[in-house]
Amino acid sequence: MENKVITCKGLTKRFGDFIAVDKITFEVQKGEIFGFLGANGAGKTTAMRMLCGLSKPTSGEANIAGFDVYKETEKIKKNIGYMSQKFSLYDDLTVLENINFFAGIYGLSDTEIKSNSHSLIDSLGMRDLADKRVSSLPLGWKQKLAFSTAIIHKPEIVFLDEPTGGVDPLTRRQFWDLIYEASGNGITIFVTTHYMDEAEYCDRVSIMVDGRVEALNSPSNLKKQFSVGSMDEVFYHLAREAKRGE
Ligand SMILES: Nc1ncnc2c1ncn2[C@@H]1O[C@H](COP(=O)(O)OP(=O)(O)OP(=O)(O)O)[C@@H](O)[C@H]1O
Image (cartoon, rainbow, N blue to C red; front, side, top):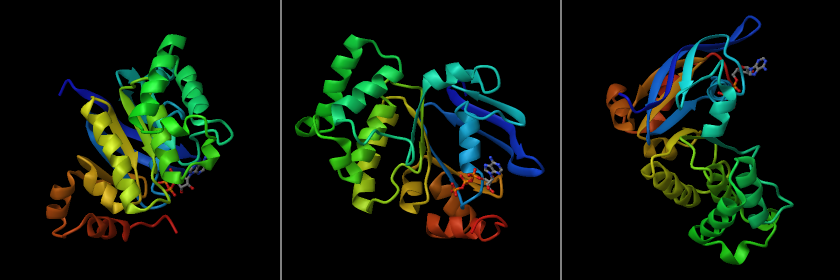
């Protein structure tokens, strides 16, 4: 169990009287692909912001890559990558400018930036697109580029908040090839999604309902636990109990 890179115990966030995240407890192993599911309003983003050191918990404990979420938020930020649908790339910069920008933000040296950015562009098969503005790329390409820039500093963990919103299943599948590659290189993946095909690709999945983690296991064990044939049905079974959401 020495390979735990995320541990949280009784982690809670209140907004006034409202308990957005209610005593969540789990551990994630190094290199694991951990799916963080829940209906709208279940508390995923609030929980993820605490784990990234962006929001102070009300109570409970959490340790990320060896650092405490109350006292060592700057160290956490240096050791993680983060990608969301809302915050990713600069549309008016080129592909290469975006890569260089994020590499700089993540603290890489000029020499590292030069060598990393060119090998990244090659590995993504984007050499012909290096000088194109990001605004001209299809969404699927933008997502792959955003993911690659989020891990350019080889973080311990990358947090992905609905990374593949709005693209078709084939493009999602291609995106997941990058996720598997990163996980094979020892990067832990913490991913929220509303797509149940993606839930099937995770090593383990937790499902939040009204601020609490109501189920946590591998997709195959969850299906056994709820005696159903798909993650869709597992999710429906739990989410229909939810009081929050739409
Ligand atoms: N700053 C805040 N002040 C008050 N309530 C908040 C605040 N941030 C979130 N909430 C509430 O906490 C609950 C959980 O929100 P959160 O955004 O974490 O859910 P989510 O699971 O990420 O949902 P979605 O899938 O829609 O993004 C919601 O009811 C939301 O309205």
